Picture (cartoon, rainbow, N blue to C red):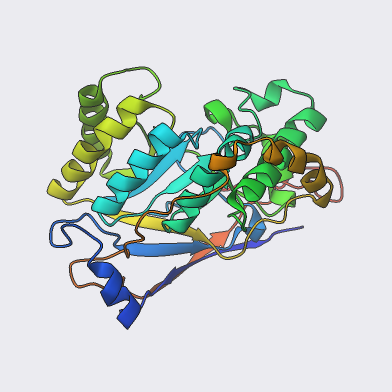
Amino acid sequence: MHIKIATLSLALFAATGADVALASSCAHPETALGVSRVVEIDTSGGPMFGSATKREKEHDLLADNEVVLTFDDGPVPGVTTPILDTLDRYCTKATFFAVGEMALAHPAAMKDVIARGHTVGTHTWSHPNNLKRLSPEKAQDQIERGFAAVALGAGTGIAPFFRFPGLNDSDELLTYLQSRGIASFTVDVISNDSFTGSPQRIADRTLKLVTARRGGILLFHDLKRPTAKALPAILAGLKEKGFKVVHLRAKTNVVPLATLDAELQPLLAKAPANALVPVYGPIPPALTKEGLIPVETDVAPPARSRLPEPDGNQQAAKKP
């Protein structure tokens, strides 16, 4: 039986002199949403998190009234940048599941996400809405090309975090992700920002659903202008209702397939010259009211092996 362990450790960011200096970059630290804790995920077991799936998943990362902010489909400078600015104003952090093509088209925006202290995962190379309808080879190429392209556009290592387009996962592709030591993230609260152009409706729906569920992994898109306009009201509403933001990080970076880097380099070179030079915004710290993120440690149950047993049978999945 091949079982790997998924370990979650919650890390402390000490209030060093540098942290104190950065605190001034938050416009209103006394009212900012901040970050309550940071969860560092060991992805070697290929764990899966979030409730919007029929597949077996790991135990919930979050306690009541905790949220994770996530954004899919970018980067798009005219949308991603104002989203980053809003996150800065509220001194909070998010995870961005970037599309490979977008990262190579807008590498400066991709670098800006990294520079402002957010986590970057991937969302395939070109966002086919249902990977499981592709051949295994093409689906795996979408996954691998996405990681290679986003890492290339970011100019640095990225997290082995993946989200299926359309949330359309499959046992076969989850098995592949597990074999590569990649964690997959579905969602708990869908903002519906892909289906409405009203910032008010996006904010109202998100706050209603997150309140009813008492937290969860929130889904937004950083290619939708209404999302950028709705985000201040959403973050203010989360603060008012007493929700706390949890920031996800990976224990190690993903290792893209070496063969894809040389293939993708010419595409990066085609990006406009001004798209290659990032204009970094301020990098505010992740702060609580006390200025510290508390120390905690947690160990998750073993990630369910989706790899076949020696006799060809799949391991029986059991809920924790």
